[in-house]
Length: 120
Image (tube, rainbow, N blue to C red; front, side, top):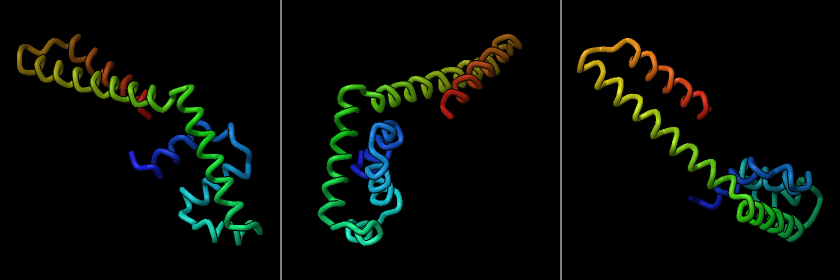
């Protein structure tokens, strides 16, 4: 996973653990695509000060992920839901091709609907 995408994802998961300034700087840098110099100018601090704050914030996010592993668990959950949806579709296709049980059709639609709602 690209570093920018990884940091953005970690910021969404753990952003509240950072200071407001750290969240702002990471948001400016990764989400708004501002350079360190642009952020420094806008915030009235040095480029080095912004860089240090960004690096410290990144370290906090990576440390939290290494301890809590929410990102990893979220990816596993998404993979499991995708597999459930795929299986429900296969069961429904088989059912349509081999006799059409209304109950099976209704249950596969319900399973797929629940799995899709959990992916949002």
